[in-house]
Length: 342
Image (cartoon, rainbow, N blue to C red; front, side, top):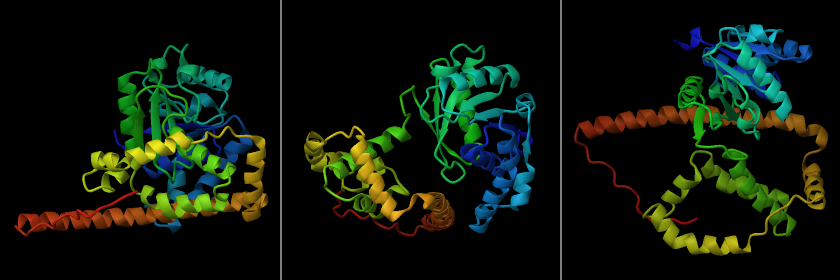
């Protein structure tokens, strides 16, 4: 079945739900929207078309915004939204009782072979699917905000989620252009928020202890680690930062990191420190400008995606050229074996 023949239900049309609609519609899926709030539902498709127009301006859309929006249909009734779909992507409030009631309705109304996925960022699937007859087809599919610009999606099943469900979900999100990863078993915060939480914990602790301003700590990330982490992860980073790879890096710097860990002071989110951080941030960005700055962030993400798309095309062309040279018996370039650190 091609994407054009598939249909996805997006339940809840806030920011995440609208972004998911763009993800699936951009990949050619038909998308059914539903929201219990009629005003939110009525405003969803115009908002989706406006966001698609921004994507088009950065060359990230292979059709007109109107053509994308034509594949998106709003439904006032939940049963109509889930009729004939292959996947339901739920995006309602992060309240376990509300999700439990929604999944009971989805399990009853959606086709028996449809995957039921929640965008929750913190609730394990086991907390709201245990009593369902179709609990084997339920999982968490946790995106990064907004999923239309950041392709990662974390797939985490409950203990009773079938391997077939996880396999089919991964294939479906890949078909939608996302980058799914599988969380092998349930854990609070899944993967992304645990990694983000660890970094936030240390950054906030350093700020609380007076080692640096919030602005300078942001600079460390933005103009330091973040540049590398925009295109490779921490394990590849250290693998490339010592001539002998990961094992060499561990031998060189493991002792340093052990000593750092012994001096680390966990951050427990005291109100006084949070207030101090908020005051510093408000001098840089008044509260009434947060929404506009969020739009700037999204445009920067679009520019980065556009660059990565061009870079991927250039790398493919270079790879094809290298293969051609290899086939013609040209000598390969020797790898750089210079010392690296950090």
